[in-house]
Image 1 (cartoon, one colour):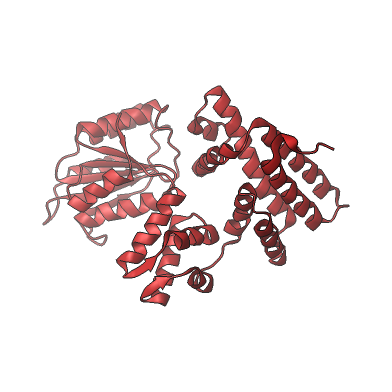
Image 2 (tube, helix red, strand yellow):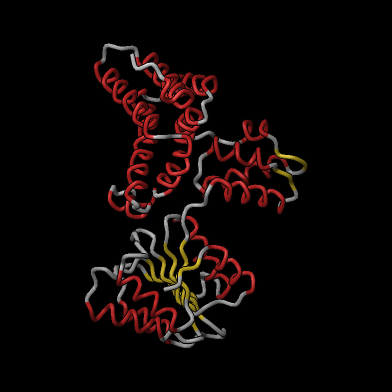
Amino acid sequence: MAIVFEEALKKDLASKELSNVYILFGTDGYLKKTYAEKIGRLIAEPDDVFNYCKFSSNSDLQEVYDAVMQFPFASDRKFVLLDDFDFEHCSKNELDKLNSLLSDTPDTAVLVLRFDNIEIDAKKNAKFKGIVASAEKSGGKAVCLDHRTVPELIKMLSNGAAKRGLKMDSSVAKYLVETAGEDINLLSNELIKLCSYQKEGIITKETVDLVCSKTVEASVYNLSKLILASKSTEALSLLDELLFMRIEPMSIFYNISSVYVDMFRMYAARNEGIKIPDVAQKFSYGNRKFLLENAERNLRNFDFKRLSLSLNEIIKADSLLKSFRADERTVLEQLIVRLIYIIEKGELVDKA
């Protein structure tokens, strides 16, 4: 079973040499939606009722089959999209029909199966492997579209600005990701706003601050990133900003603690030789598997001593915050300082 990734799909779109079948799955809903639409528009406009056909998860598979097999009208090919077909729980007859359709998709059609709300474990799911194998018989491809990494997002923003005649340095693109979050749809909208405002020249951090929205979720998440980077001054300053924005102290605490819990899970998994997809499935991460990928990277600065000491501090802070006796700001400030001190000093931390 061959799985390809975004770059391979980009090449198909750029060359306009499309396969008969595409199976789009992965953690990034925006990418799956965007590429399904791009494939469709290469063939027909969405308002072309004869050559642009969309089917939902509860559609009759026979109707999908008929749409694929019917000749296009005044066109070389037709586009057929089937969303979230529940191959796991359909009857054997329906599954056989789907596999038959995938293996026999004619050259006059491009069939796209998009799995948006159905999670796919490509390595373990036998039925999915069978679907992919059927698609390959007609020259089809299964495309994994997961969340882009931060470097990929930075490159996307810099290239997007360049296409609009502006310059955005990687440091500025990174700053935008840090302030606006890693959601690709949101970042695309923020880039459009920046380019519309700047019109020409260089996009700076000052422009980002002036034009772009800072999401609360991204701001809280950035607090954890500052802690892991041992930037105490910036972390305490951001804490002040979050509290000024009336973000609940417990929400801030849970965000910090969840980052450490993710790291602890990945530390244990790494020692047992367990891979990220298995951890994600075990703890129901769903489309947030990228959190475990981040945790794996963060572990480069941690040994077991640092990790266990950090978790002990988090447990203490949790108890204090739930007691309603301690000042919440003070508890969070002390937690931040202790976590950074642990990263810096490790085994030299005073246990008293």
